Image (cartoon, rainbow, N blue to C red; front, side, top):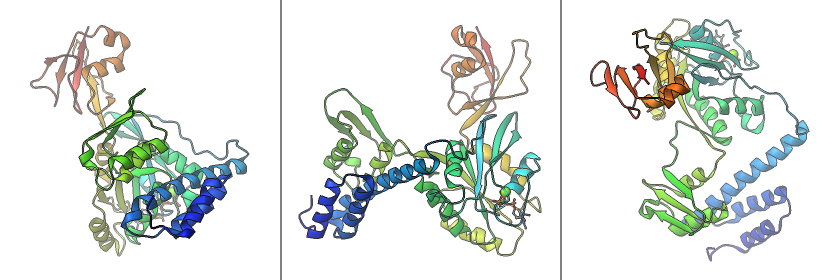
Length: 389
Ligand SMILES: Nc1nc2c(ncn2[C@@H]2O[C@H](COP(=O)(O)OP(=O)(O)OP(=O)(O)O)[C@@H](O)[C@H]2O)c(=O)[nH]1
Ligand SMILES: [Mg+2]
């Protein structure tokens, strides 16, 4: 513990230690945070208090929610997955989500120039080069959904369940503010959008304490800090492998199993309205880790390039099977990136997998058309394979 904390802080800490329920703990932690001297020497402690606070808040909220619903199931926005992937259309009310769903899928969802036209998720299939992508039009997301406002609970749960996200932002209003609301609301509920999972491997072992490989990559903390955090999270024996620069926050993130990492693209809507050009420029200057596609649904600008852009964030490839007679299947098999010929065989039929001898491959992964390959051959998007048993 730093030696220069104030008596008020120590008192608050004492109250925290002796608190009997989450609410009292929350009050004490908040007091600890407000009374801790703010300087470099207490940064780690401040971070830790903030982490504990956010964990506790989640607990208290959950308790409240359970009381409200009597522990039973409240409204649910569950949408059964169909096709190669489920992708949510997320955006503020009136941002043009339903209009875009209709444009992309030919569906006829109600559109309105007022907020909350859509009140529950609506799925529709988008065909793309031999596969089907399930788009889900969501009700509008508003500031405060993470605290349960505006169907917050079911909406966030539905977004958590999808494979990827399309964020729709009205370019003609205040795109930076809107994106800020969306990202911070999702972030508050443990969703990490277009962020990389920190490159830290934690392998739990039965005995031997905590071994850290790559200590020199710790940016703002010491190996002792990492050990302390792990102990607090009840990890007593583990090998931690770090391969690139990481911060204390990264360590907390990898230990938090409730976090979900999702890929997303931004569709900038209403590109035909006054102010949208300036809006797009501002957004492009402020946001670097998202691909932004400006569109106008009304004038059909850029709508045609969207299916390929949506496909590119899914992390899947399309693989076609070919019979020994040379007939190629019309429908592609969606597979994870880096899948092998053996993975493909497994997906087609278990006997093909069990008795796999070799495969012939046509397409990007083949050195020449019809190349004979083994079970570990890595496939690429659009490949055609013929499996031999
Ligand atoms: N000018 C213009 N208006 C658009 C465009 N796309 C959608 N709109 C209009 O924006 C309004 C809202 O469209 P919706 O598709 O209902 O928006 P939403 O995001 O589904 O709205 P909620 O369901 O309420 O969350 C409607 O009046 C649409 O006609 C566009 O490209 N250009
Ligand atoms: Mg709608």
